Amino acid sequence: MKIAVAKRKPVEINLVPLLDSIFILVFFFMFSLATMVKRQGLSVALPGSSSGKSITERQSLSVKKDGSLFWGQELIKKEELSLKLNAFKKNSPDTALVIQGDRGTAFENIVEILDTAKRLGVSKVTIETKGQSGGGN
Image: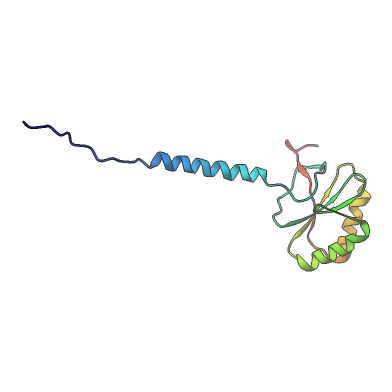
């Protein structure tokens, strides 16, 4: 008696859905990590601006409402600002100094910082603002 043996098809694994899933996961993690990156400096209420550009290499100098200064996350006295700016100019000449002035701080505080930076020869100084949608008045 003859026993009929069915021929088996070779097993194929389709990799296209697997690769699609991997690419989706890669994009998900790239975008989620990009939104989780914290800015250097303190959280201050920034004034708005309808024009501006992004800076990649930066050192933040935050000015709170009460006039207190923060070099990155470190609280500094106004007397220490010249020392910090001299060291910054010497060690990081291509890095921009970004002033994050709280919306409620006195304009005089910002002008003092700008004047000190100019006097010490810090060439790349900018003031950070938050973008405004719709252009504003």
